[in-house]
Image (cartoon, rainbow, N blue to C red):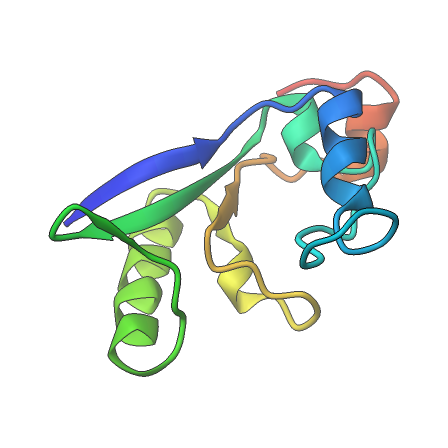
Length: 112
C-alpha cells in the first residue's frame, strides 16, 4: 500500500488560510482549527492520502473506507492517534502523536 504525506507542519498563517476555506473563501470546510489551535502548528500531526494505481483515494466509504480503516489501524499500532475515530469532525487522513500532551500544553510551550 502506498501513501503520500499531504500536510505536516503548518505555520499559523497557513492554518488560518485553511480555516477560512468554506467560511470566508469558497470551498469545503476542511478544519475546525484556527492558527495555534491545530496540532499541525506544533509539528506533531500529519495528513496523508492513500494511493491506488497512482491516483489518490479520498473516498472514505465502502471498500475505500475499509482501506482507510486498515491504514488507521496501522497508524494506531505505531502509537499514533487516528482522527478517523473521532466522534466529531472525523478526518481519515489525519494522524497525530502528542505523547499525552494536550493542545493547551503545546500552546504553553511544552514539547515532546
